[in-house]
Length: 468
Length: 96
Ligand SMILES: Cc1cc2nc3c(=O)[nH]c(=O)nc-3n(C[C@H](O)[C@@H](O)[C@H](O)COP(=O)(O)OP(=O)(O)OC[C@H]3O[C@@H](n4cnc5c(N)ncnc54)[C@H](O)[C@@H]3O)c2cc1C
Ligand code: FES
Image 1 (cartoon, chains in turn green, orange):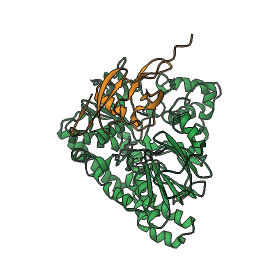
Image 2 (cartoon, chains in turn brown, blue):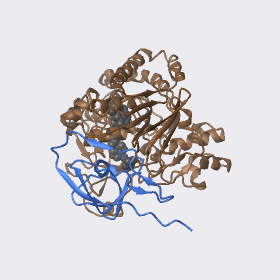
Image 3 (cartoon, helix red, strand yellow):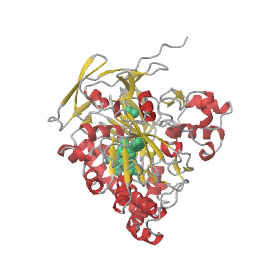
Image 4 (tube, helix red, strand yellow):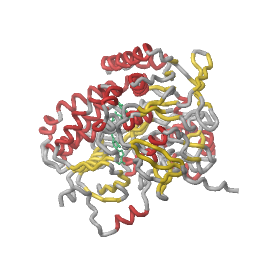
């Protein structure tokens, strides 16, 4: 398979479902994923998990087995441990595996690289001992490691899920500090469309909360002015709730404010992107089938806009069906039949989103933090520095580099990008859409000289384990 | 602080971090093994020498940088392997 019909980047629910369908319909498919095994964020390490891990992570986790089985049975090539660091308009994909770089080209690309957690800039968030809730969950999934006496703080379904998973494992969080306010609950009343499913999701949240309450994990709501205390490492979390200042001592603080699309590859490809006011993030502009502004490049899953794991699976199938049509393998009518149930289920999942977006909306102080808060963790640039750039005439993130070093560190703006956009937009009065985002360039991940040199050598460059 | 469950049968992996022996489990990332061993500071930042440890564990924040075999790598994306010599990246001397 020197030139597959389709390369799928990312083996989460979207990539697994899309790749499986395309391969079942006769396309030659190559799936690349940087994790040691398929599963994505939600089903990370599912295939190798222990009974205890499955018990604590619960049915939402083990439900991924069907997708893993489908992928394993499909006639396709999966390369795990493959970090994609360059993708170009000609659909050439460059990745590294075990210190060697490879280049492979396809007629179609399906980008299903998922989401990352929204940055949570607040005082002290750079201290050792402060992690994201998702990071703590990754430690449970991959290593069976549990944070002891940790305080979970923020908002979003994943915050409750991680709390319950910690509880089931016998190490409940020391406290749950929620930033949602009554205004969030009032806002959801406007979303009648997705309301029924929304209330079901809420009921699930409520069940999780009851489980937590039974374990007598203290819960604080409508918390604001969150700050992590400590000199060289976190020693506690301070916040105000119901007019009272609290300080909880703890060495581990787990922050979360929802997830946002990982747009590194779609940005590097210069695909069209759009600001999503409800989700406070950018996402690639797509057709209802997931086709991007480049007709042979598709995007599906939480990398396309946050809609959750079920939606990601259905969106992956919709994209695969339309790729088959675009490639002339099936007609539009056949596509509609092939993807009928996926399309219906996707619409249902998407209808629920505005409800959840409003319910778990991040507080303004997190989106546009006060001057003293570090925004760019790599180069230690504060929100005040960004505002100073704006006063000097900086209009957008692509210009901040002329003023300072925000976004120039090793993470390439992954962690500060959205905050820089929001802070600049607030300072200039422009919309986030007009303010724009950092210019992302390859390599998307650090590569060694050896890896690049090997690319140019005459050695076989096709992925191993492939047909000639 | 982190506590391990259910992995007692897993093979152990011994490596060093800044000269100190660390014993992790096979399948751990370097970051997981270091956290399990009680290391929460992985490095100091080049700009202000502020202590840092892993934040996202999924390869996006680059706060977990360490040096292995002369290469700076993300500890959360690098498997723990027997005999690795892992160090904190050096902090460049402050500009006068
Ligand atoms: C840390 C974290 C934990 C989460 N946990 C849960 C959970 O427990 N339950 C839940 O319902 N939702 C969870 N989510 C939400 C998540 O976004 C799910 O909705 C779902 O996993 C999305 O599926 P996806 O297929 O779009 O992407 P993902 O599942 O995120 O899959 C994307 C895959 O692409 C790979 N990838 C990304 N970039 C590259 C690259 N450059 N090269 C190679 N591979 C790459 C990733 O390693 C990943 O395996 C979590 C999100 C995060 C960020
Ligand atoms: S902890 Fe974020 S990249 Fe490793």
